[in-house]
Amino acid sequence: MELTHLAMDTDNDAQLMPSAPNPYPCGMTLNLDAATLAQLGIEGLPPAGTSFHLEAMGTVTNSSTSDPDADGDIDYMNVQVQITHLGLEQEEEESPERDHAQRMYGTKGS
Image 1 (tube, rainbow, N blue to C red):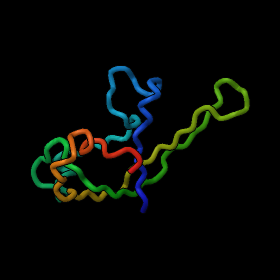
Image 2 (image 1 turned 135 degrees about the horizontal axis):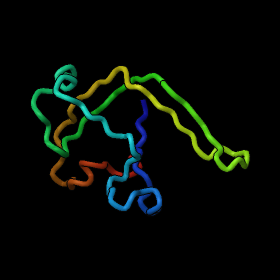
Image 3 (image 1 turned 60 degrees about the horizontal axis):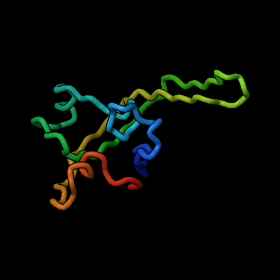
Image 4 (image 1 turned 90 degrees about the vertical axis):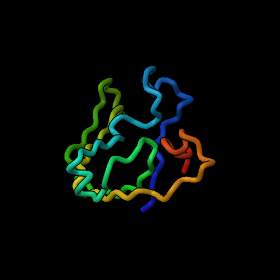
């Protein structure tokens, strides 16, 4: 499976809310509670900046389009996916040369 880096182009300030320095689209965060971490075999609480490899499978629960200005083209498209299966594995130790931002957000285009 090929992974796609989802960071948005931060040169276009209109895409980001002024108070949100996170370059990733809304909804690209998973929150895992203690029970889910235990199901995934994660013991203890990983510190912020820890990299994990994810593999997931999901089911489309909703898909929609809209043309609010009625000009004939689709202005908005959305697909909602319910994650049904998830694998989570901690990555090997990062090299000390990588800075915190690279650990948190990766390298654009990778």
